[in-house]
Image (tube, rainbow, N blue to C red; front, side, top):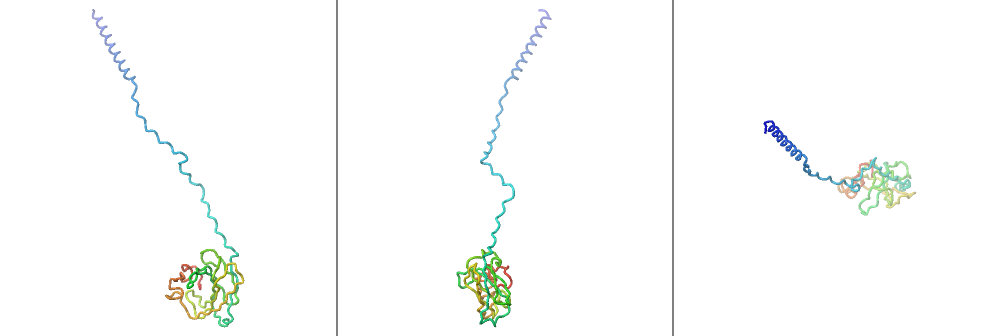
Length: 225
């Protein structure tokens, strides 16, 4: 074998080795890649029936208006002075009050209405209704106790000797031609705010307050009896 022949055989062997190595590398690169791990599946969507209801749109509905007082829910009549006391009528201010009947005979009932009237002329016509209620403690209806007092000093915390007063124990709202006679005379002065007074002390005792209302309401007019 000549030298040239040996070189050709060696070159062929080298080329064969290179071709084999290339095939091996190609086979390795052609292998399928490993399968990656699957991600965790997403949580199912909330069904429409379980979703929170949408917030209402627009302004909230307005509250229904309060019922207007019944214009026919009144008591009308006259206040007179008993003939035997007509000459002894003192000057002063007249107050007409309406209260709920009380189950306790030693206490007056809850104040419902009060009205200040001029006392310069008798008989004195009056109309008492819902417009005369100093605070809201129910409708002006049912049976009421009416009291009229000719108060000399106009002080709600005192009663002067010589004050004239009178009343009716049961008058139905809607009554007309009611007559209240001032037929009693205050025998001695009283301070309604003193302990032992007719209202039971400074906080009103069974009356509930020095102004005669459930809690001594400060909105009652000056001179309330």
